[in-house]
Image (cartoon, rainbow, N blue to C red; front, top):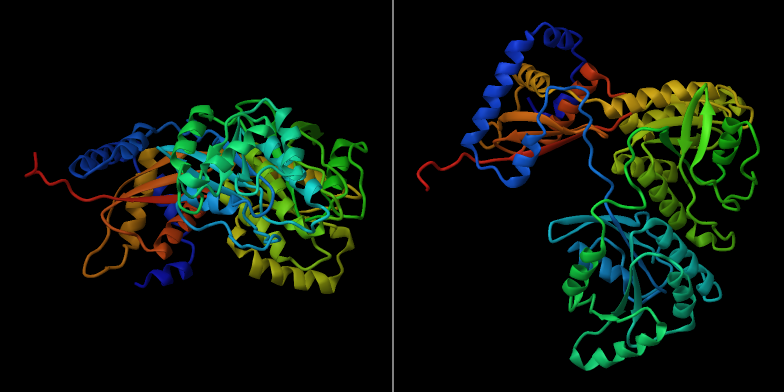
Length: 505
């Protein structure tokens, strides 16, 4: 069978019943035998870390701590994006000589000497020469707010400017490590240029060349010495009210929803998008339960900096998701579902947070628009068909109470852990029913599987060969059919392993 055909297979209503009918002791014995079978294969330290977490306790919630955050700030054209690409080891950030290049993504996952961290690039755009000081300062404010360590990049060939000094005033006030990076020191002859940056009062400049990589390794070594193991900004917290991020494009009704949920006017509501700063970590009682709505702003965006709206929206979204457990994405039903709506949803998926879709302004929907909306949902939101949908009116408070069961369902799915024995029984039944197609005369086998972490549910499959994307999607779909996972993304990762050569000592 072609892997593409797996997408069209109907749901197997008997599949869950067959799993339920299996004897628990037999399931456990099979999983133990499969685990022992892995000893015949070449495994690395990461594999053993995953296998150490194997458990049959469905309540054993395990999740990765929040990665520490390094932010890069500086005025346009000093080489921030080139430095991002150098650190990542790949061309991700857009590099152009023209200020004003807007990017959707501003947060990247990076690694140095086996230390993983998030890299925030604040240098995506500049609206006009007149707004340069205010804009760069606003970017620095965001970086300070969201980071554990700040890299302040200056062009060593130009020397300190008034804009640089403007940002330095902000950086001096914070109690976080700041690294002054003197970029464009391409060879020894240019090193004296970096010395002039001592005058900024941020300590010793680090001479680097983002273009050629010169000095970047030493800089990263020093940063790792100051970077905490777990982010102090977005610590994972256990217990207390569950943390909710309200997301959506400007003027979609986030402030109205918060005011209605709080039962008072906590946020100024204005038709001019981007004029208010959303509150920070508000405790809200909704349907008799306390929730914590995390900061969905991070900065007060200047209205005249309209070109940067998408850039700042991405920053705010990333900031909220770092702190949240579940995201409520508001969609204005009176407007067509936009590319920006889909981008925000995709950021939630990338962050691994639970997801609820709230279709706002439902009271303003007429029959014609309703027909178009259903078609748009089917076309543009098919990849999140598993997310609970709630139809609300934030302004009037209509159906607001329906948010709570949707949030609880999404979080319960996000916390779910499938015991290792049951997961391997699931895989055995699934493969027996629909084996992976042959590839080059060989058939990849799944040797063993386990749920490595919860929040979000992340499964690791040890295999003898690469599984087709269509087959992995088929596994994910069957997981949803059997275990629900409504409102939570599911990640299925592969580890292709070769049989150990017993002749080698």
